[in-house]
Image (tube, rainbow, N blue to C red):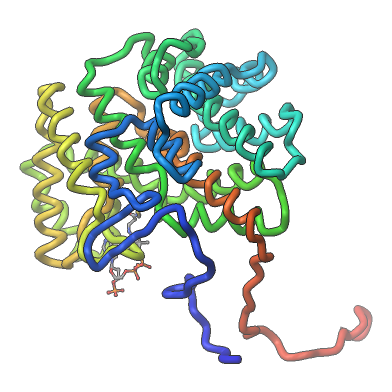
Length: 374
Ligand code: COA
């Protein structure tokens, strides 16, 4: 056996999956064989969520049933709502949503049941309740009353309603839906691999998703969409952008929202999200971030040949929609629950404990010298 260390599991294929395929050579990403671009054009987020979880696009009857289940599972228990109200207002919403999913495990009657049927039911419950938890904290920390979920609204409409008490124009809702479609799944990324690793010990889905949320929070992964907004706020206006980015590169800083472990010639999700970012900017009559976006992107490609990833356009899009910056990654969670759950179920179906090896580089064997002799 070779003792070569593959730090970051770079280039290692650890398992097979039928859920999604990232093809960096042709800038393509497919969910269950469909390109994300086509899914964004032709489907709702609910249809894509069904596809990711079940393997096929739903027919009318299947979609109706899926939507009905999701809508009837949206409410959180009084206890969890009370717990969210008691959480520190300054807590990061990612820590709140991670805790909320963990709390859901305490109440779920099937927490310990890892059968495919129970796992699918638990998935829908976590998927339906998580936006309610995110929106509740969004309101509570501003001292506002929690708005309960509504059964007559789509996944995206309901989230806007729970956060702001109103639903924006169809175009804005579509842009949000598209962002959720693009965030739903991305093969063996860090958080998904975390979820699969937790699952591989035959632990439960609530635990695996809780761990995945912790993993997604990091700025090298999902947390990047928040960092992009912090960067845009630092740049402040388009006239500052060129100087700012050149200085950052001179200082060898990592520019958030750029680069990817797999895509080296551009992230296949970016052109679609970029289009919707432009649309939202026009609707909102705010082109400042669009201009900053273009300038930084141009310099990053010219000087470093590093392209933006999907977090680059989603960050400012969510900002223009009115979401607080630290809620961007929790929104990512709301969508990625579908991908994580599909992987958790796939892992359970053909499980092998994930347990890599390490190369020891510490002290050689030594003998304990008794305390009074040291
Ligand atoms: N800004 C500036 N330089 C970057 C960069 C970025 N965003 N991303 C990569 N690079 C540079 C690295 O500094 C490194 O340069 P070097 O060879 O001179 O040391 C080179 O490109 C390779 O990058 P590396 O970090 O080794 O690639 P990776 O595959 O391990 O990392 C990321 C991928 C995503 C962690 C990395 O691109 C990054 O930190 N991006 C910013 C965070 C982000 O947007 N994350 C969301 C990902 S979807």
